Image (cartoon, rainbow, N blue to C red; front, side, top):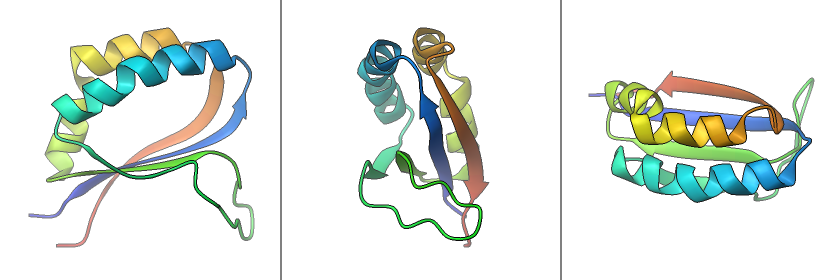
Length: 97
């Protein structure tokens, strides 16, 4: 079964306090949903129209698990805390089996 991944690239962070509140809630929500943090805030080299800002990569055992974690009550609470504090490109992708 192919793994699932959350890929999130932050274009702008307009409210660091909202991001901090989100981070406090999102980490436990992701772990409860079976997610494993693979990369966060490391070095990024962007090419073409890429964005060299904060980038997060989280792995789940399946694509379905990644979708369910995003819809979980705990993660929805984290999103409410984040609100309009950032502009980001958030994707859930299916890995190759």
